Image 1 (cartoon, helix red, strand yellow):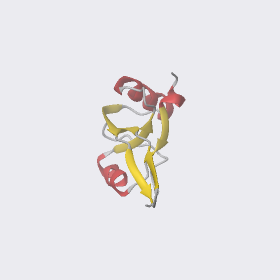
Image 2 (cartoon, one colour; image 1 turned 45 degrees about the horizontal axis):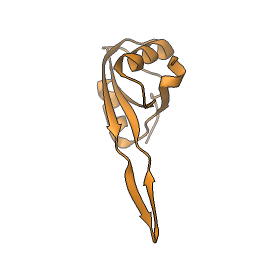
Image 3 (cartoon, one colour; image 1 turned 135 degrees about the vertical axis):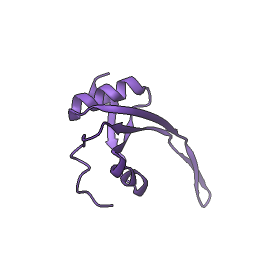
Image 4 (cartoon, one colour; image 1 turned 30 degrees about the horizontal axis):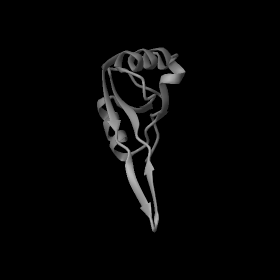
Length: 96
């Protein structure tokens, strides 16, 4: 699995943007990706040094609209902490 396959998209939420002050960036990642792959993908794609990676599995949620039942799919996200002085430019200047 190459670096572009590991990272799917940045997570855009108030909670993820609150972590930007502490150099924490949140990404949606591939279901089979582990911490080492996420670290290598971030360092390769953005040219930064990663201090820590935390992986969270977001559980599937049952949804219902009237008589119709369904399930929102589960996914995996990674919260990446960068070293002092490192930033990722795609997040800078964005407003929620």
